[in-house]
Length: 272
Image (cartoon, rainbow, N blue to C red; front, side, top):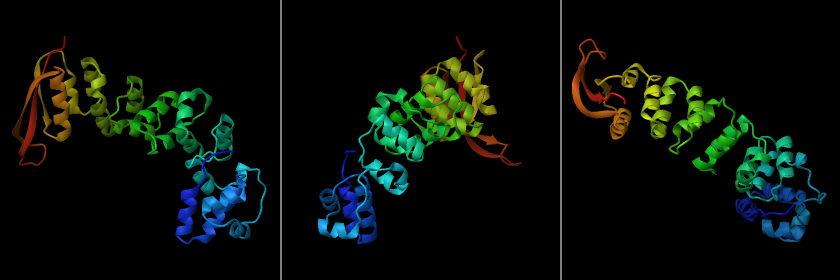
């Protein structure tokens, strides 16, 4: 199989004086079918030294005999020509490295996504990998996730600022507990209509549930926090509330004596 030579990796090993690792790296390159001249150039030593350091082995590679440690290096450096057959072989022999192979070769996978099988465990590894941007991670979730998301998938979607579909939002919402839903809700609030916003507010804490009532005009209060201010500013922007003010009020819920607390007082508009 063709591909890029691990020049940088091998030179770094030699520069650090780790001759044992250098020999092991050269061994792996030879397992891949690379000849002595190419390996010597890659690890920056003479052919004679290389022949003494690494015993001759067969040129035909057997992926089942290559350790995950070195196979990971080869995949990351795109040593392999990516094929459907290679993907399936890695999936069967080294399932832990399968997501990495797909990520490194994402252009092929995203173009022909129906050709590849990806499990929820694979997806969890994919969304945690920094090689992909959020749009690419969302693509993989959209194409491969079932309707029941794992907590890790839902937590990724909770934190992304990239807009997702309403279906993905709902699947993530179900997988999160109430305390984890607030960030998801605020990050994705602009994809919803006023009626949909009202519905999701009803599923949050008591103070937010009061905001869901659009059957009449009324005033409601929230603590003046960074989160709540962003929320009410957006609600005002879309006309869900007509206005809000921030003022100090005595809060008896904190201590028996109470204390002055900054409060947002919002005027909820009646829905159409």
